[in-house]
Image 1 (cartoon, helix red, strand yellow):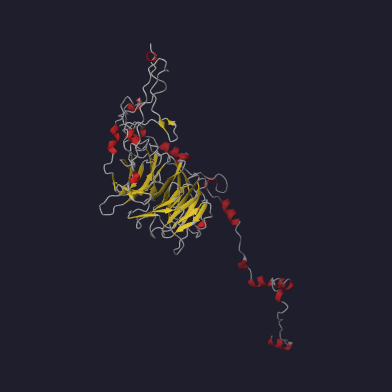
Image 2 (image 1 turned 180 degrees about the horizontal axis):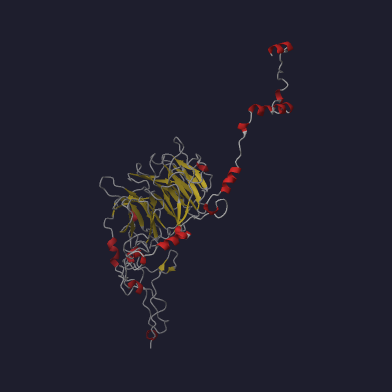
Length: 595
């Protein structure tokens, strides 16, 4: 008998635990597919954005049936070569059957869209944790919401909602580099730190608004606008505020900031509002944009007395710059102008004098509209409002070199905040992960592609419809009907009052607990609850009797005359030059006559 037949007779079909196959329909993503994706630039401008092809793997050779071969098992999966030429075991993905061999992969993950609807007003802040499994959103409805792609069902609802600062708008949200905590920046003057599950860990101190010198205050004294974590040290972060300061904080010390950077303006008053701030990827630079249109850069190794680089009038004066973002390599700086400026500008950090590229006419009505780099550092994405009445907002995908439009994507409302996560991606050669966009109608759009995206929104589509719960699935306690008997307890009975309660009430009145009588003093003059005669006598005896009205004032003064002559303590200084009284000599005859 062949070895294969022997193993089959013994019930052995292979080695190791077989993974359960997901039998899902290939068209499960079609219900979220977009139909209005179109390029807005001619083919010559989008030549650099050619789709990338992935060649199909060569079929594996059929297993030999020779008796000299080793024990049979499942056919090994086809090997995939990595960048270094070695063989890498491919990870299992139930979506491998969705992409056909030699199919052109989309350049951007915008072919499909998933909507998360729970906010009631404009989504003003978005953040994704480093793993890409959770989305944190903040809105003008004062709420923060946590979304988990792995735990959501077809309803797409958040698993936690709370108001971090009462009736204040949410301005900025940032996850720490390790993903264990996140910051919430609202319109208040105190930053708040939360753990991964949304439980509050710390509320940082607020400063004294009556102190003029901002370096002498322990915290901010005006509304917060933005924040940024140190990319290398998860214990440090910065916050920008309308009190014209950027403060560096330590997570372990919530009572006082670590360093204060006072931003001075050339305008009268020497103060301005810091609208946004950011760390460079290496943590050696801090950039901040202000309300007076200036753009500043400090080195973290300096004393922060004055900025190392400054551009006055980088944006229109009086407009709130929405974002300041460093490129992946840290050589470029991207700024997004606010309402009234409507520009996107790209700056060279090494030659920080004038922008190397500018795109105008990018309309926005919200001060927190941002612009970010793509993970591969080749494109820039930002939102733009409608230019005409009744128009729709657009998501602009721009070329980094000249800020020319590569694609324009129409959405249900105007995009405000955009996040482009670099990790929820399948193809190693194409860094095009999923894009999360916050809209003005309170909706969050997750743009993805089934071919190039991994996890994220695809987890929801991979889940089948929820199975209906039957009686057999429930325990006996849940399946058993609940019998309610009204008026079963004595407190709910409707009947005559119990007779003979007079004696019971008198007895309860004697009980200090049931009558709620206050405790009486046990010792002292008030013993027994009364103030006795002894207490009154004690008070009267201690009174000091005033006897000055019974004394002659002339005698009271003259009793000190002799003492003043013998010991002149107060008049000894001028006794030598005081005149002596000279009285007239009166004859004795005149005295007798007068008598």
